[in-house]
Image 1 (cartoon, rainbow, N blue to C red):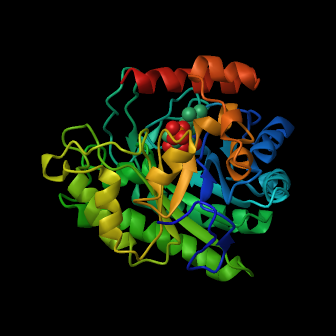
Image 2 (image 1 turned 90 degrees about the vertical axis):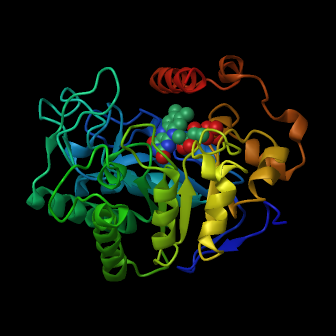
Length: 369
Ligand SMILES: Cc1cc2nc3c(=O)[nH]c(=O)nc-3n(C[C@H](O)[C@H](O)[C@H](O)COP(=O)(O)O)c2cc1C
């Protein structure tokens, strides 16, 4: 079995020194316009020690794609100096710096968008209590958004990042185009089958790789994050995701990254309930692309368990309250790891107020769901 401290070379040529990545986690610490703060740079730099790579929290590629206050933006060239300082901070610890790029689509609010109506593939509200009804994007807007992902990739390259991760998970815009719940379009960006609804993703990948070919003068990582299944009816079923992966495994992507809260979760789909869904995902990739596993990793045993069905391990909340966790792992200082539950654990490492509140709200909504 792979050991977490083995290096890994991606298809693009970038090598990670080990198999550990910081899972993308929004910190809600950016300024009102999405430019980065010193607090945020310090936060990432502190946590990069001992990791193969840090994936930043989601950064919006367009102003209309902003999901919440305090979010990082990669939508304007004016963000470049701040983004560059962020990449340097992460790299100063020997970790590769990957920025996650996204558009929130219907998962935002008019109030966050300075009064603009929220947008999505179709005018269908998300199934949550405070959801607003979005406006369906025009074809021109879709093309502009696809270009914006390419432009965000250019900025990531120019800022000195080692890569980007496309955030195709957690019900944001990329997933909204693939989902039959949020995409009811009857034009070329919609359709009844996953094949038809894949068009947006396909064009997004072309836009991103065009930017890589044009601007990168060094190997540059492109990863893709996805959620395995939706609860909505209609919604993305696990089989649709396996089909998506059968497309992505033959693409130029360097890795795919599943989004899960528990790495051993079993699919809701009865045909795929004999083992954890990460095992089916890994099989579907046929070794053509490395898989990043995630969800509840806190100990060495968890790391080893994930590596049975994945090539890389992403660690989220443990790094929030245990910033040097990866260093402890390397030094066999497992006894020094913070093992307490969330509320006690966050006492150990002071988090600033916005991040604490965001993380606490998210933690409680996940454990109560
Ligand atoms: C505070 C917080 C913010 C998050 N923000 C993002 C994000 O911006 N992008 C994303 O893909 N996932 C995000 N996630 C999900 C994590 O990347 C990860 O998948 C999840 O927390 C499970 O891993 P863990 O148990 O190691 O934390 C966030 C999670 C937390 C706790």
